[in-house]
Length: 403
Image (cartoon, rainbow, N blue to C red; front, top):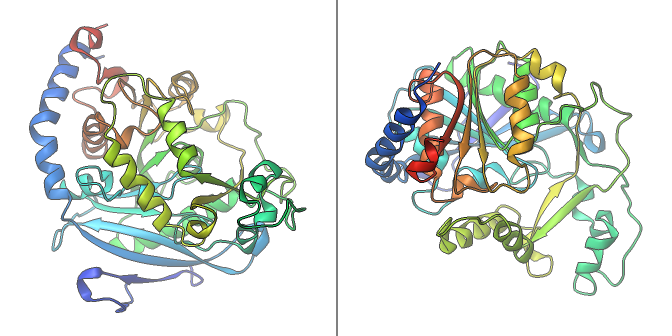
């Protein structure tokens, strides 16, 4: 492992403040079998998952984020694992999207909703990471200055936080896909050394698609399989980076009202999610950003990210087994945006799930166990049911699933 990278970890079970150093398909039948198996086994596995061990790691690496380039950044990594379990080579890393940090996206405190704990209960050693600017990872100084928000967002904090809108001190997008790949590489190398494995599986959501998918395309020797929920794929993305840092707004915020409105516009079926779960997600979101929690009524901050690279050519060159999931009611990364990735990927081992009654936030909704079980099957066997390729409909009424 690179000598510039090191880590600390804290296990709650060890006591507060104690830090230790640690180095062709039969689709109708398939759908019915998967759905019944999830109902019978998923809930039991999730109950066990809720009591998994949780360990915090901080990976130190040399940053390539322009505003702190060359400085040491601390990347927060959460681990969920069964106490005393031996996972062997069953190791997976979760990578978040554009706004929500990984520990909220994949390990929310609402009982029965942690994707990470679900996989840990099945015998995986499960990690998640926050790239620079998110959650408990290093947040560059421009994120602490509301003048670096867009003019429209600045107005939301007048007069509670600022007397009047102001000119930005840092008029650039804060992070970029290259700095994200650098963060991911540091964490992947740390996990590989820690668990003595050659490869890890990756699970990613939304902008995590270009982050994890692009990383996997560049480092196939380190990634065994991919699970991509609502991946933000762009066939026409530029092949190379623009001049960095790219001009633009440094970061953005999201209030509870904005969070609620964004989810509500993606509801397309009865009882799609439990209101109490949304409350838990927002509470965890604010807890992950102590500074943002003091701005107005409390907001979630996230850096603006310049992207490139994960395009038709990069997808075509990717041979890693890939499971892709698109929620039918997703209005942020629509199913029409997701299907081209399935078509373009060079891997012959690839499955696309059309997930019914689901939004961009599928992992927090009622069909989450279908998603969780499919990811477990893919990471374990490289298949969903008996399918190693093709398109599957799940989470619809039985008559619709057979279409």
